[in-house]
Amino acid sequence: MKTHTLLLLFLITMSMPASYAGALEVEPASEAQISRIKMALGDQYPVQKVLAVKSTNHSRAYYVGAAFYADGVGKAVGVWLMGGSKEEPGMTLSVDGVAYEFSKLGKASESKAGGSVTDPEAKALKNALEN
Image (cartoon, rainbow, N blue to C red; front, side, top):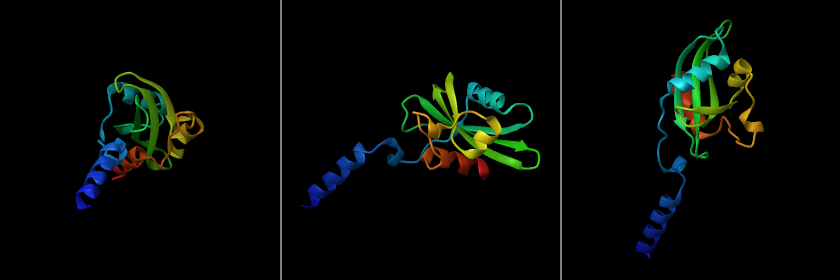
């Protein structure tokens, strides 16, 4: 019985999506991703740091977070979902309210792609950029 239980737990663990299998890898964003964020925010919001996390739900997408400065607010952190590869990002959507407010890019939550502040990738980026 004990062996069957252990085998069952092993099989369940091996079939879990990557989001449950371990910690997400927060990595530096590519130059293309940084450029896209800077273009979306414009010159009025100087970008301080940009990080990326490969999406666990989308086969060809990255969550990209940026820490930037906004007058009257100070340091702000926004998260976007970028389709495509890291070096050739495609459609970019706002995942959180900060990203939407300052970039005016469409909301990921209202698209077919989805994307939410509750996604583990968004949480990892917020944590890495706010601390």
